[in-house]
Length: 620
Image (tube, rainbow, N blue to C red; front, side, top):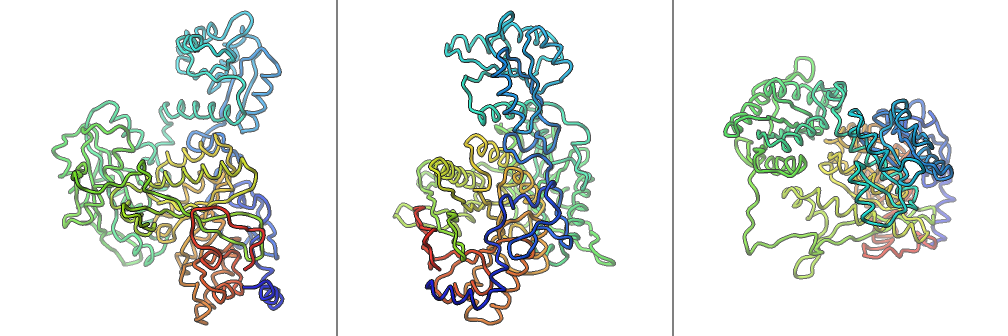
């Protein structure tokens, strides 16, 4: 499309172009957070959060800091409290201001003799102490603190400029947990302190109120995984069961989100009755986890049968005078094989449930994969996976460089398999979490490298809901953003609509965990419908990528009208719209006339391995 054609079309439809959402105000992503204003004017007269729009699920109220977000942070608990023991006033105030800026509470104690009294009064989560002080040095103070039984596990971290490794070894021998070398960068200080406090809080027994999910009445997923970890550590044996409700997408489309949630809560309570006294937790939207500790592992199959029959043999109320029976697949594993951690055991049951779906009785026990000697192997370390990029260009022009990140796998013959073939195979093999982590790790490396050079960059990265359901994944992402100093708004997580319809609760929890850091979210492959439309208010989205079939809207008047309706609906919800797979000028014109904000496809630039597209001089 030439510049003259674009200009004439803008003049033909001035009212529609005013409704575009390509230039939202700075920090517009914060409209979903709890401290956001109730209404914000959007360019062109639309509003980011109007009174008529349903109120989204409350987001964490923590300040927008990535220093210590996630479980154990201010968003879920009281602020972190740090006692700074430092005789140099300048250095003490510097550390205090850095920690205050990250939303933590920090108090300075400059007199060594007053440290114990300060600990008793301030109740810190961590003591940050200078190694060399007049009177009592840091090691003497540490020994004094450790003599008090109530402070035996209080984290103590030293700040030291002493490069002598023997001296550092003595520091740890004295009872300290860690040491940081001076000078230390602010974000490194924040990350080191918050990570240490997170681990300390996670070791503590959770308060009774935190072990139950208020919506389901079942133990929380976090609590059950903690119990699983303790069971593995204590080597008491038992079994873990992954219960997956079948036809979840069909159920939700037929009955709607509210009824589907009610149905899953009924299923959870039924499983809890059958499993008692062993705990059951809702793992994600349509699956549950049951932990049986200290039982005879020879009876695990019989227990799996009871769980299955407890669901399939009972009807559930869905509407007035309407009931239905659920189907379930169950994968299970004994805990005696010696899993390294809870995540490994969980992954084993996920692999087992994939096999259970294919069996007539819907049950399968975990069996470690047996790989033939001559079987081809897929290995991340061998460099068989590659990333490709495609620019996403604003139709009204913008210097903002932004790309979708696409996964490719190079085969032995040199050919490349697209993500549409790789991802299903990875999910079936139980390796999707590993691939998702690899893709995101490489995307973050690119963002950090580009940010250090100056020009801003935004990457759209797809992730599986199975991966996002793992709390450790969100914690790792927050920690990595903080440690590398990456602006959260430079990362957009792509959520496929088919996944979002089933895993709404899981994805919303993940979004709420990442929003305070500025991470944004895009709903991809959008098709209108009652349940799909509801996602626009249930998830804290910033972008909407319409389904690829709309690329042919210029050839079908009905499809063109539907596209305009979708775009108008998205703009009323404050979302920016991306048209994808645009191959020719006619398709681009139809997208532009419909009011789309961004265009992506071979007309702009084909998928490639470089990030060199000229956004400043791009003409659509």
